[in-house]
Structures are given as structure tokens and as C-alpha cells.
Length: 257
Image (cartoon, rainbow, N blue to C red; front, side):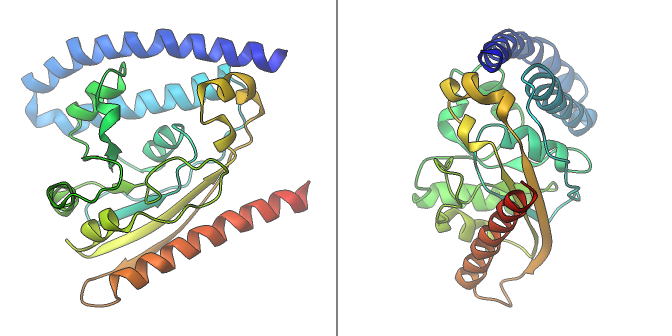
């Protein structure tokens, strides 16, 4: 019962927090960014990191009672690619806070750019690359590759293409990852989290947010250049390493239990 109460209270806080922050973002932040274009990156970085911290530590950890993992430290700057498994929407604030400075360029599904308070306008404001399920259309892949190729910030992609239903690493959607890797030399980091997939849906979140026991691990960098390793071989190696990281985390949890 206590878990259910905390879950419902967390959902209530989110239902108030998101629309209020959406209004501030649309009416105030967007205006300031237009008036001060030279400070755009600093303003947007400060805003998204504040939101991530408020949501991650304040709402999910403080109100919901979830046990959250320590943040890894990922460098900021161009030519950095972060591959992360996708267990829930909590992956977003987690990776934002893991970046040492500024904010990453996050490849996001296009459906999130419509009718979601705070999130939809943010995707347009930050010019995140938007993709459709499957990532197969040539024009979509070209736009994705172009955005990643010119990015001065880390690029984050969830190569599974969607949230897992059982917490395991799903097969990668290779077309989008091939397009990104083709544009420049990369330093690739693997960020693997666990413990969040059981609360991927709203109903599960209400029942189980206080029972979240999150874990995370990060490895890298792995160097990739088109002049070197075959892209498909590299992708297969990254997928296998992510699976190994997840297995090791779960094995450690079983041993400590």
C-alpha cells in the first residue's frame, strides 16, 4: 500500500511539474534564448540539467523513493558517441546528468515531438534528431547522419530502437547507427543501466517506483574510424559488450544478495 501511495504521489507531482515547466520553457526560456543567441548553449545546458536533476533526484528519488545508481562521468565535446540501452524514460535524465558539461544530442522518436507537455517543445528547442520506428528511409538516415556529423556535443543513441520489455539487450537497429558512424571518427562509450524496465509503463510506475533499485556501468572509449574496423563488425562488438556488461551487473547483484 505504501508503495502504491508513493507511486500515485509521484505521478501527481509529474502531472503538475511538467505543464508548469512547459509554460516556463515556452514563454520565458525560448524568449531569452532568442534575445541572447550568444548564450544559447549555456542557457539550454543549464535548463536541461536542472530539469534532469529535479526529475531524477527530486521526483523519482525523493518523492518516489527509488534507489538511484551513482552517475558515471562522460566527457563532453565533439566526436563522442554514447550507446545506451533503453529500459524506461528515466534513461533520459540519467544520460543528461552523466555528461560532464552542457548537454548531449539525443536521437529521439518523432512521436514524442507531439502533444507531450515539456518534452515535445524541448525536442524542437534543442533540435534533437527525430526518427521514425525502423529508421529505414534514406532521407531520415541522411538527416540523422548530418546532425551527428556536425554536432559539437556528445551524441546519444539508443541502438535497440525502443524500450525493452524484459530488461535484456535487444538486437540493435543497425541502419541508424551505421549512418552516424559513417560521418566522422568517434570515441564510443557504452552506458548500460538496469533496474528500471519493470516501471516502463505508467501503471507499473505507480505500483513499483519505490521498489526501483537502479544500477549502471560505463565502459570506453572505443575508437572507431571508417579507415579501420568494418562498421558491422564494430556494431556487433558493441552489442556483445553491452550484453556482457548487463550480465555482469546482474551477476554481481545475485552474488551480493
